[in-house]
Length: 284
Image (tube, rainbow, N blue to C red; front, side, top):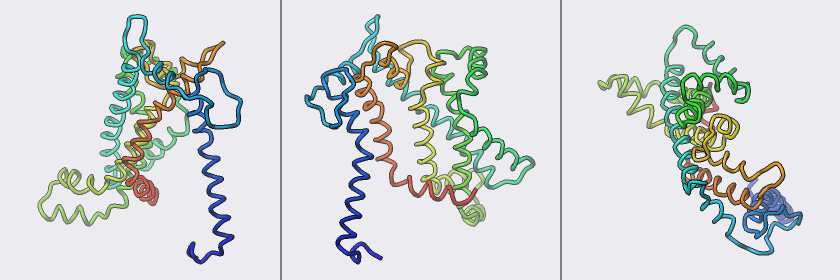
């Protein structure tokens, strides 16, 4: 039944229910915006999501913060988050694409057990592996470096990327590859010129989730990084929450700034999200 065929009272009830759901969903976001725009650092107990007075001082303080040596902290921390997240996405996706294609197209001993082992690794939280990861990075001399953080993030996100892409590769007809081979294409050309262009929705979704995981991760970054100038943005945000004092205005402003790049990526890749998620979940 179409929306036009519904009685007016049912249509009104439907829109009213959707409006209420939107308000409930957006209320926490509006409250964070209120904290970021309010002139005080106190946590407001008012139910209203709108600030009584508006100021941008919290955003200026967060963006313009410097350390004892006069270095621009926010710029360095933003660069750290961008470099770590982009490198994690690039390294993880590069390894996952070839592994997922091999698992989708080839038969070899240990294929099923290997896939199950990748799936089992997703059952354990990152904190469970924190001590051995720290020991390994310390032995390699990668503590307090972006390279060590990229190595940890890429390896922990690899199983999800492999499973996601493997499910999408299964939906691509083999006949397309066979036709390209009949036309004289090599296996490498088939993979690069036929398979990868068809897998763009899955690649976009996988890259987005990999980027988001690295961008938002806090526990590993807080443990493996010691230099304030090397902190990623989530670790920098935690510095506003102290044992005896919490700077809620600065925290809210920083949270909005940290969320902006992810929101921009969602808008840029939204046309790929539905197709990539649904097609990758059909077969596995």
